[in-house]
Image (tube, rainbow over all chains, first blue to last red; front, top):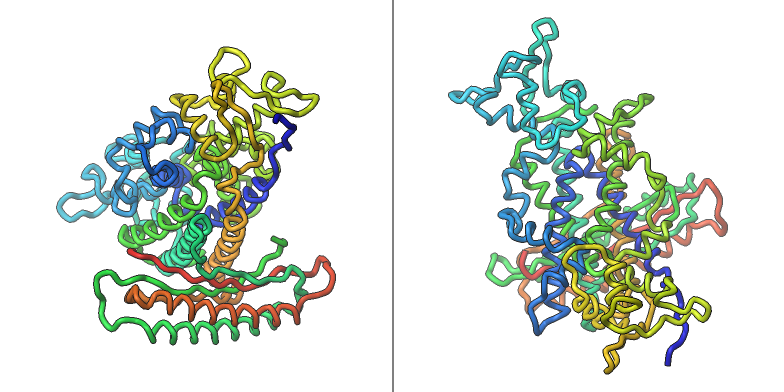
Amino acid sequence: MEHALPKPASDVAILTRSLEHVLRAVIRLLVGKLSLIRLEELVRKIYVQESEKQLKIDFPHKRATLSQLALLTGVDTRTLTKLTNSQSYSQPAHEDESFLHEMTPETTIICAWMTDPRFCNPSDGKPRVLSLGGKKPSFSQLLSCMRSTRGITQQSIIERLEMAGTVEIDRKKQRIRLAATNYYPFITNDEIGMLDVGFYTVALLLGSVASNIRRARSGEEKLFQRSSFSYHVPRKEMSRLRRRLRNLLKKSDEQCRAAIADVEDDTPQPGQTFAGVGLFYFESEAAG
Amino acid sequence: MSPVTSNSVKEVALLTKSIELVVRNLMKTLVGKITLVRLQEMIEAHFIEEAEDYLRRERPGRDVPLTSLALVTGLDTRKLAQVRNSENYHKPKHAESEFVSNLTAESSIVELWTSDPAFTDLDSGVPRVLDIWGEEGSFEVVVRQAIRSRGITVTSALERLKQSGLVKIHHDSRVQLKSTKLPSKSVRKHVGEAKLGLDAVGHLLGTVHRNLEAPVTGSDRLFQQGNWTHRLDPANRQRVESAMRDLLENARKEAVIVLERFEEPSADEFQLAAGVGFYYFEVETF
């Protein structure tokens, strides 16, 4: 029987809101460390790889077509073919030298300055002092190493690198010198370490979320993942609450550590599982 | 600005590995719920907004020139100007009905099928049963109009909708829209799971961000701890999972008591949101 159907519901908008919240938080941590172009490249490759896996689950008895992949991703088949046939498609980004050298426009410049024989001394690897203008080797010649330079002025790059203490400029002689060979001009090693640990723990939580979605489908018991929170904590009480919950989390953390140590094998063996727990406190201005 | 110590490609590679893991696990959660094209639209808008804030924090009181924004994003200035001048800039995507209605290929097809008089009787709201093939008012036309991507076949679209439980194919080569509930039944079952998970991830990311800024802002670091082993005999896996579940559930219950003690009965502007998150994870091979 034909009957009127409700308009598409808004579960989708709710999920989109949560996704926006996560994307914004991830991006906030990435700005300055990875350009949008590189992030999109990473997302595109991994999304397509995960879509291929999903199609194998959705259609277990037949080979998924390119058209199915295009439907799932929204990307046209010609682009998909180009991407999946590219050399870097199956190579992890952290092992891909060209990806690492071009994380941001600044890293592209620093890397070329330190490795390209036009801009460094091949015998000792020391970066050359460059002219700002015409005479080669020049900084403008170095800028041509960036893939896209439309709208990026030499002045804006110099300003940024100078602000980070990466370059020193002799304005009288119109020369520029690479003063620090930091890969990332704007952050310290400690910050990189903290970010690394932070992203790693976020990845583990996301792994549990993805696993629970799969388990919900298959009917398996879900992994423990819970939050408890309140939107109505008076500002003046925050430090007291933080202290109380820190003590509680610390105690639980020690109990978990002891329980894990209790069952852990003494030596590494093939086939062992990687397992653990994460505990964290959070607070925010805005509800939700 | 904090003093810069030397870092090399080795540290950057390690960080990239963790970023890749975040992206991979996020994509695992999102495939089937939003297309890559839509996801990239979101990423692009949020990245440009965040990059603008980042540059403004670096040079307070100064306008952010397009050329600086181009440097941080890697996008050309023409594209940036286009995004910054669009009326949806700085507006949440979840509030844009056109965006939300077209998150996946299925949703684009259903949206068109239920809103165009060629495919639905608008008076009764009943979507028409369509011939699969044909030059007018057919499923083929819906697919061609709803999805502009090159290379998508009508057969594959039909297969996907059938697999999602959204359509019924009649013996006379006609197709009926069974449900407009999106996401599809198979995805809907775990939308709640995905939402709760993403919310927890958002909270954890907030904690990571705050702790990263703590040396600059001078604020206390928030508690964030993980414990794990790489040397767990799979035979002990269930025992560990069960022990962790009990420990974490007890901790959560205790946390609820503490939170309730601090919670005000009614909302006001001097309040904050605060809470705790717990999760167990396991990975076969890492």
